[in-house]
Image (cartoon, rainbow, N blue to C red; front, side, top):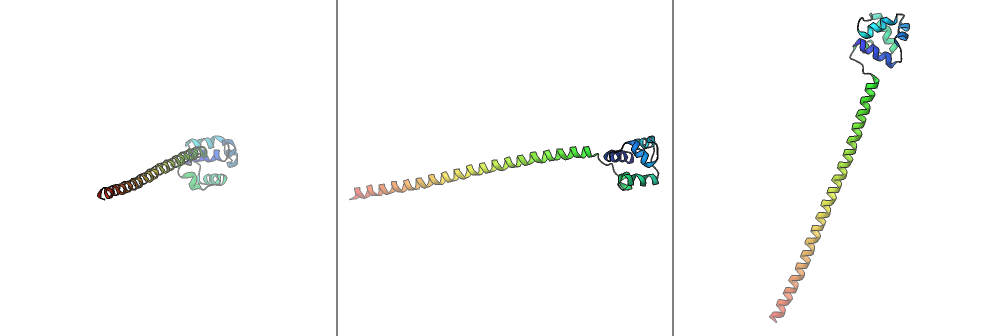
Length: 137
């Protein structure tokens, strides 16, 4: 991981192999060998690299550091996915509200129909009662 981390951090800091070599007082080929994994810097050189890059030695030696461009692309992709999910959630809520509205209107209409039937039945029942009373008289 050291070789990949050296190259990634060097590029993030905007340094060429030549510029880094000058700061470390080594030849450019030495930096190239480190980045290709053909050789490794000694402990003193690792400390100097960490100071130049403003990182810990453990960061240089640790797990692979992701290139910022790849991280940015991943971030952008996650943002797009998040936006798509938000749009879907809004659509789902709108559909749910529409369905709830239709059901509420259906229930109200049914209640009105039941009420109208009751009123008309009472009217019909009352008229029958009157007719029966007229016949009985």
